Length: 103
Image (cartoon, rainbow, N blue to C red; front, side, top):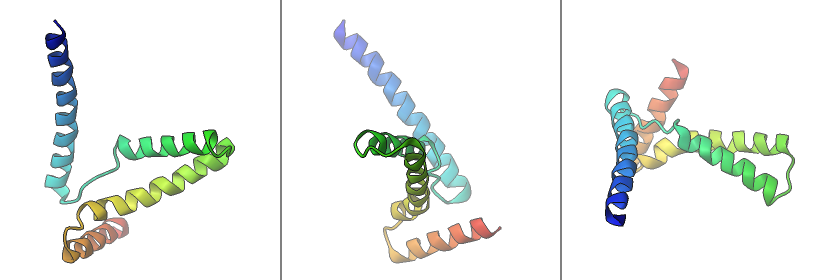
């Protein structure tokens, strides 16, 4: 019975991974840019707030502002870091991001 339950749990978790991968591949296929603006960056922001408030003793408002800065930097750097297998791809990534922001 445990094997059957673990099989169902694995299929459920695998389905979630498949949906996330499908979303990333659809966005990349359409705009040729990996979109990391999903819940993972929001989760990093929540973790930054949690750690700043619990470990650092930082009040809520400065912790949220710190989280905004960290998430902004992560959102700008993550796509180019993910595509930085070569220098030319990194330059193309930065130029594509600049064009997207200026349009």
